[in-house]
Amino acid sequence: MQYDSCEAQNVGYACAALSVIILISRVIISRWRREPADLSFVFVVLSILAIIGRIIVNYFYLTFGTTNEVLHDPHFSDHHDTSRLETGSILVLIARVLLTVGLWLQICLLLLFYSRITSGITWADRLTKTAWVTAVLTFIAIVLATFLECRPISLYWQINPNPGHCVRAYVQLLMQGIANIVIDLLLLFIAYPLICLRKRTLSEYISLYSLFALGTFCIVITIIRVVLIFNEDSSQTTRSLWASVQMFVSCFVANAPTIYGSLRVARRKRSGHRSTPGYASDEPLSRPERLERDSWIKMDEGIALKTTAPGVHHNPTPPFTTAISDNDDILPAPQSRP
Image (spheres, one colour):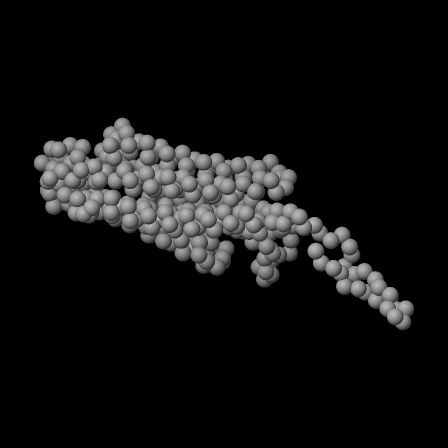
């Protein structure tokens, strides 16, 4: 299905508006709950800037047209100023970089989220580090591919002679799509131990499997986007429209768990049902409560320790054993630790 620039712009506006609303909601809830401005707060602010910047750039290159459109319709340039086509083609490169920045910032937010709820599980920590390294390396590779797929770079905005198929940026698209899917799978593997940690209530199971469903949905959207762009010979309007959809889905998947978890904890505090004294505003939060502050999934610290070291068992002896001294006094002997 071929989309026109008007449809691509309208979908872009709607998806960008929804994405920004989600991100701003997260910031407002964070400030309302007086949470510290940590790394996730920085990523959220950068995401808002990237989304706004991309939608502005999208407006201009969809209005000006691009060299890619000339490949689809040789008469396209007859109705557009050549200099505007060149400007639009340059802006496309900037938009692709901003899209990659936005998507990878959502990946970083998810990595921070999973790092909190799986902290203390050795192999999950290793997978998390692997995902961080993969995210950094793939981001660099995609940005380089964005500018270097056409060499020299002037081919991106060259109209005559025909610059060839490199302006369709299939390599950049495939690298971005495959890398996104691989990292999403890593994130699902990181969260998998949560299923096996302990018995859960029905609501906890629903929340947990919703998290997996969101991650799977994000992968499906990435695949649909890549397939449709190939079917439309990399039409720029198709690329723009589905990039906007993917940006919104990624933004929702990355921020919905944290927003929901924060609202749930705030609702519990308002209702007065505090299970532990750690919820008091003037007392420090314990580790499980810090986890609940950031997510909708709870994990017991003891279970995390067992998962980390399956061969280590708790010492069943009491805190002190007794020993007889030389003068027949009964002395407490220090407990041996596992």
